Length: 499
Image (cartoon, rainbow, N blue to C red; front, side):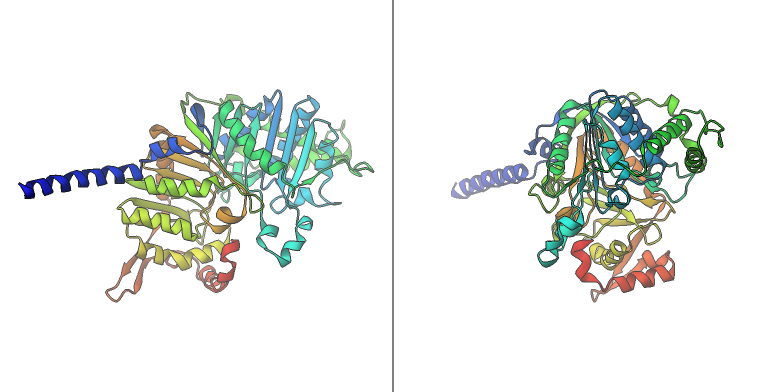
């Protein structure tokens, strides 16, 4: 009887232990529900935007239909036809009385933020009382950090956010230039990227808080009107860029130049915009674009992270938490994989539990960042050795991977600006949208799986003595000169925390 009693007690304790263990690691959907940083919208309308042209059209549509307010922040805004026409759109909306706040990063958007050289365009816009423009973390404000913490100088606002009328939000990996919006059939070297469109006042409000916290940051620099007036009135440039883009994408073709009714200067400017647009034949169907095409509503929330100047980091800990909650599969699509200690530990814990982990990233032949690629080719074999359930794929197309996406158990999808490196985890500001939906997560995962078809899988063999033999790696398909350069850059390990 004593043996039976002891056995029953043991069984009760075992069941209780299993129950506690099960509670300690909730599944990914329960983890999503338990995040405390903000309240999610259980019915936010979302659209997946992996195609460049549709992503441009979505921006154009919500901006063109803005009635009350527009908040915009980008790391990069180029002065090509895409950047100038978006600024032209904002200029038009400012004249209509829409309240506009724009923030650009001092490192990513050098051309528009340099004093005495590039600020004329922004100064032209702030002549309206309903427009505020700020530059994030200009270098001259942080020179003392040379003797303190270099990361405070390099810190950037990496957020990419458009919020319209406190209801519509677009975020994701894309900056504003031709490299992010042109069809790859028109320009082979464009980026493969991912954005998300969300219609939800609650989610827009969450993104608005993320915008506010950086916009009001003490390290930003406000753009004011030029007290002497702009030597070059840039309103003409903005209006022409807007009108040229609008005419072209709606199927009206290019403006005819030279026109006898226009000045020589205006004709030259129109010719410049025409010379750009004529190369992009596949962006002329905006007239048939619909903002939503039957997309459904799903539980959605925003996670935010400050730059090193702030204290908030709701992204890193929750990505680790989702990795710990995953039961079967984690898919990571990211252009820059330089794993930090926390990221590596979370992936290893998942691998040790038997969770299948797929990492899809750039190869030496597709990357736009030699330093991050140098660190990656020094790391990938060790990752595969230590984590047997991890598979790594390197993109092999001439288009460059720039997509920052995570999928957990095909139930939760994360789309945003966050890279798998030290800069995103510890230095820059970042923002992501998190969507709880099996259909949506499967849609996102399916696109990544199609990208993987255009990728090489990297494989190793671990010998009995623990040494690693490369079966197929970056050097197996890349130019020798590129690999030699990357091997040389690997010696700069002290730069790892800054890239």
